[in-house]
Image (cartoon, rainbow, N blue to C red; front, side, top):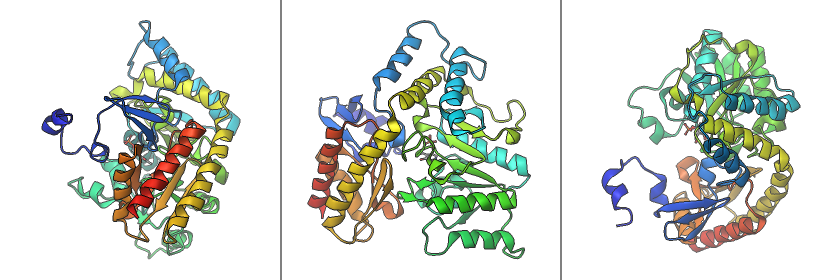
Length: 414
Ligand SMILES: Cc1ncc(COP(=O)(O)O)c(C=O)c1O
């Protein structure tokens, strides 16, 4: 009865609801509430879209204030006061303090749309068609992004060949991926077409929480410089403070040629995506990449408030402090449950890899955690990695409560 409307009328493609069979209604910071009022702790954070918490009061107040008068809601890419204030906040509070010189391209509202824009722009700049992506990558579901995405089920959904992308082994693969990259680029008989771009996540999230080393990221940057290849960092899931700094690449001291942001960039979980582009690469003609929802003003308002929240609340030091709580808990209380469990992560994104025991256990843990009122997700090879990704603003006591439910659920399954 509770699910009848969905099961009768909504497409079979729905997925998260099958893991969390409940009807959600309210959400506050790191807690979700069903329509019956049951409380769940959220270790998923809308796949990284609510880094600053569900219904963050400061961000919500800015959005409500905007909505309370007849301010324009969608404006295509016309100039608006809300967009100007968003761009100024991004420049003054995020880019200039980090000495980053980027132009902002507002894209259609999804992450995948901004990835498409970045790929097109890299191809246009270089006149090349091929792109290098990495095994384990996830960049989205539209054709260009999907071509750079590796998981089989997503790719099978395309229905057409996904081409013009070559996959390279990611950091910490069994072979030395930097040597391999150099080899295929330097050998004129390697058979690989020189790419327009190298696209990467500094932490592969959907790929199973694979954290690239800073040295590896630096080496990829150098290879791109040496060969005139555009380096695109997809910070859609691990940007906006998720790894402990606003941009995930800051720890490597590199500057990508393009950075893609979506998910938490709107502050409140609203649709919004942008590409940050080095000015000299900004060569699209007007409307060459277009989209009706590039002008979602509520998202701009939320984004400005989110950026201010990030700075005013010293989120970076708080993430560092609470990240240590997660790391210690996972290493001491979870890894100790079985020596075949491996723990990976950084900042506020952690993975518990159960592939060494049996990948099927991970989804069992997700179901068990749900029964115990914790929202948890799987990722990675064989969906065998549990993904721990609460909002950055989670209260200490709720974080510890969630970690204890996690431990209890894994113990029950093991
Ligand atoms: C790293 C990364 N890139 C791209 C995307 C695609 O974003 P969207 O689902 O908004 O199209 C996602 C979504 O999970 C992602 O995690």
